[in-house]
Length: 366
Image (cartoon, rainbow, N blue to C red; front, top):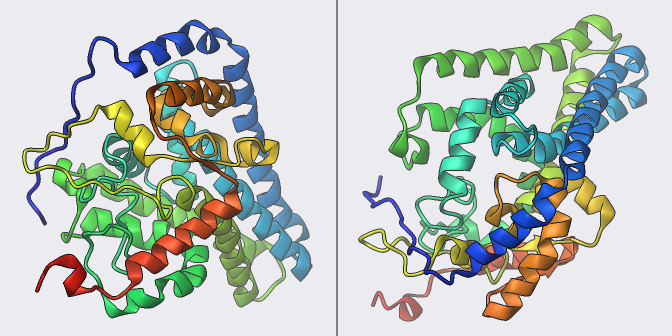
């Protein structure tokens, strides 16, 4: 693994725009308790919705169409619950008390994931260093797709803007059954192990979460529902495709479009811009005016607000975003808000660009 200094951003000056922006938001928007109440109610509703859809598999699963619809909506509820409730709770932004957020985060194990691992990935690698090559674990995923300019180029990448349409629908399967194990056991480019030693109990909890998840999503339906095993496994796959299609839109619409910036950490680790300026530079919004998109995607539609105010629940963001836009205009800072379909199209243009065959004349390697 490349030996790199941990990135550090320039200290803000006395007239820093972010300090003034944060003070304005704290004195106005954050004092209104209705946004937190709305967030808690929404999260509990989504959790109940997941239980209802899963129960429908057991109750009406003898009918094949009902079985597959039940799995599809279970996957839909799973990803929307993650994008909203679990995403806010890992930031201690859902409930008022930290212990309540930590307790709620443990429910993530029911979905087969590792709360400990996801917190380390998201809070200690992605949020401090978004889009920074060799540090942002959410961008660097595998050799299947090339996004970082400094990533190794392979011949197959010439077609990534085509084949990723078929791989992205398997995103949640990759997360639960490949990526988690790579982070726990892998040695090559292991971003998590660069910073942390994994506690032994987390290995046990990882396997326990995977086994329990498979038991209640596949094992129990096999015992309860009068369907062949392969029909139930097919429904389980439909669940993951449904979840992945919802989730991938959020993942590819906020940091990785054709105009995305992927800075390398300087040799001494010291950037010449502040943390807040960096967040504005590498983060984008999508479909902020859509009530449906805001409900489904929580802190991802207003993603600039999320990165500037990561410990604030997503229900505050529609009120915070106009403030951010005003400050961006006043200080000449970038702000982008795409409709989701343009964001997705732009991402695949990025894939085509990063997958193009390298030109040694252009890169100066001759």
